[in-house]
Image 1 (cartoon, rainbow over the protein chains, first blue to last red):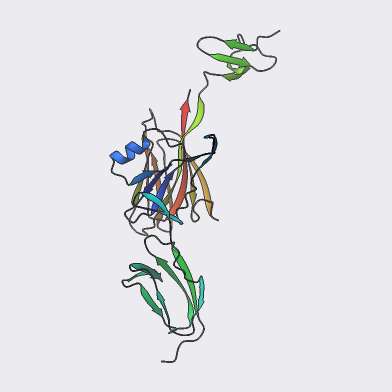
Image 2: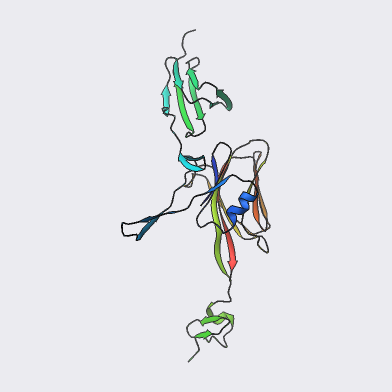
Length: 145
Length: 136
């Protein structure tokens, strides 16, 4: 299996096993960021091959860090939030939040949500090494000014 | 009684029941090693990020150069990753052709070359591909 990824380790191309012979070198010759993930052969105590384990790559759950496949961390945020009072979340430094198509850099990782206008909102949080998370925020009544 | 099997240093041919492998010609055959067989050269999946405006290019290399653009099957998904999303389109392209899909400003262009597929698009999507190889 050949994995191609970007500068943040996000996987965007998976070539299934068996990958064509020579393809890995072709991609490396073109300076593409790739790693090869080989099936894992499992042997018993007598040295008998009992099975071959293949990694099931999930582009959303896995990413590449230091040349290896790793599981993304979870932000630990709820999927839905009924916002009735100012609420602060502390997220990884460098987290980006998207709201209404606008991307906000949370430089120190913290964000305080305040119920200023009654509406339904959808916030998307992204950070390297983390599973992209969508949180639906519902505001029933705005806070009095 | 008809001859069913013909084996030579060059080929193996088997005729269908009731047909003669020597005199029946191709219509009589059930199997021949001279027929080209389709095998999978490579398959994979690609996630293309959305740009909304400018086209971005994604290249899938074959690892070899075919004598002519190969047959490629492409399935597009609007969402989902390793399993099909609710929106699924199955497309098959003959080598050398390119497809263009334009819907409200979104464009997907797939071009098949002898040694690669080039995808130009401005809409985030996933696609699975199978590159077929006609091999003897």
